[in-house]
Length: 348
Image: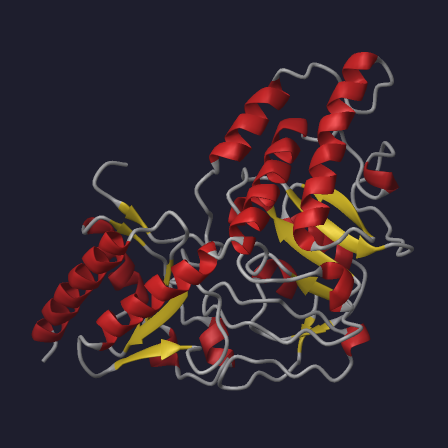
């Protein structure tokens, strides 16, 4: 959309050109990947190439990659029928399946007493807070950290991980469950024997191909230090917003955060109001996770971190990426500062 700046990468990243090209090529593959003829084998080759690309990007050569419709389905496959402990900072796709009993510090860090009976996210989508995953952890939602920070599944000591393609510039509607070899799960979708018998249904070849290409490109960017540059931009933005005056806090900035994420709360200025004001000014930001930001309520993530209801209802998330320019960050800081001044003038 002309004249707009997209600063909501944690909700979904723009489609990478590598993913678009891979998807267009895969759309010309007529065969079913379960068919044994030449056309089927060509489709199967595209799926298996993507599986290898995702495994390489995740450092998961010694694991199984099960393609799903997204991290939400992967969470259902990993967590369904179990009763794992989690913290109330988890994404709703995970929280729906677990017991939110793990304690959360004011920094956003979570203490895990029994890793084998617990699930813990790698990084939080709202605050960017990066967790310390304990050895032997049963499940981890890797979605927000994947492609942004160094991580190797094979070295992590966790049993299962969840990822989604559209967070790394792949297409929406495809993700994966990563699990250590030898782990068996009851399929949630029954029928054929696709995905090693763990997820029935003909594979979405084009989306999977786009996922693989995006994963390969994301790993290349990470190795090249692209996200270090993003972190510098985020810090510039934080400094500019901090200079606007007192009454604004930056959630999670007392611990390690994702390089692209800034959670900002200004007392008395509702997050939804800020989002609308910035939208009118030409900027896309959010008031929390995209799956819950349409609900006008205090952020349960911030509440779990010990912030009061007022602060938790007055936060927005700005999340940038490799395609964000310094000019966009500076424009946003100027627009947000002006909007803040107008709000304060009306509520003196």
